Length: 282
Image (tube, rainbow, N blue to C red):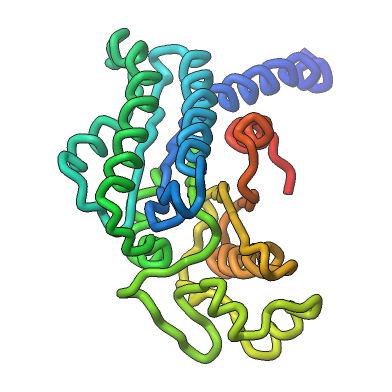
């Protein structure tokens, strides 16, 4: 057989294999929940229900993905993390229920239960946290420092971290500042740094402002942040918050990321779908 003819015949085969491998990719989706006072109904009415809808949107895409795969190719998982761990009764059991692992041995019942599991248990966690009312902040910075590499990245998987937060970062035990960089930002902190004008970028650059990063290469991690909720007192607050997160992710070489301001779940659902399906374009 002539070389040119052989090449011509092999091209469809290569394309077919590529498509099959693409469709068979293994998903590893992690949620990091900010259970700080942002979820307090008195402070932000309806916000925690919106978080629950975002979680359902992600779960819906995940289920759609695994249902399209052949059983023998299943190697997909989804889990939920917090930092610090909320002082909620049975939090270990609730977290364990939210750790779903689909593989060739997964039973039909587990497939049928995932929608209920990701409806009932996140709601219980939020409701218990609200009832407890002891909001100590969400230590997202320390989670990245100590856990993100070990918890959220698995070999031979497409690793996606979904962070539900208002974009501010604060915990009483992680309040650090080093030469302009910090482990936290709050509306008061940004105001103190005079980041409330159109030239916020030059101020940040001049004063070396930003989150304290880590010498990590997160090239195998994709991140979508949902629920950024800037203070209305500063017209540039949203831009500043997104600049902090953007610089932080780039410093740690995050493969791909998206930062989304809080919105109706119906509005963000297409964005979530595109991101998880790999169609997102920065």
